[in-house]
Length: 230
Image (cartoon, rainbow, N blue to C red; front, top):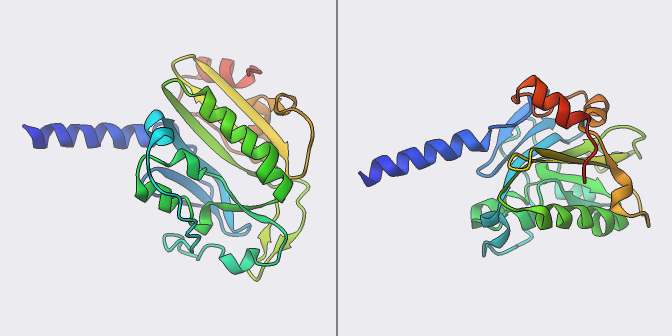
């Protein structure tokens, strides 16, 4: 009986894990608690998708800062050498602080495939504030898609020529409240409030060329993605 219960739990978790993942344009990589669409030409994901729960934020997994290559990327991921002396942070797309539910999840968040070159003032300022706001917004479960926007790029870094994106986006879907909140933030220092970067999911889709939350019924998807929420 216990084996059956475990099997059902694993099945439900697996289905939930990929429930609202976008379609991949590059190589789809799945780790235990997040997945992403790897863009080889930019050496980073087009998008990262994960589910945020209370277990994810209240867990006890230890942050070890073990940045390392991701062997699951068939073409090889960016490396730590790409960032050395670049002046840019190894900016998490799937935040380590959202992966506290298990040590495996925490460790996997430090794969270089989950990093993007972020201006230090951005990474440690407005982007950190955005990640904290998402965690503070959590009541039950949030479905999150985040990633770079390759517009107005700022050049490349390292031997692998990792693109420095001009902007980043983050979208969170609260199914319980039937609400989506979306942000587009430039990769630079800013003193503007986070609220000034709120936008629609529709506008993000037009920038990145990806249909987000396409699994929803069209009438629900259209209403949520054209609305501005905070």
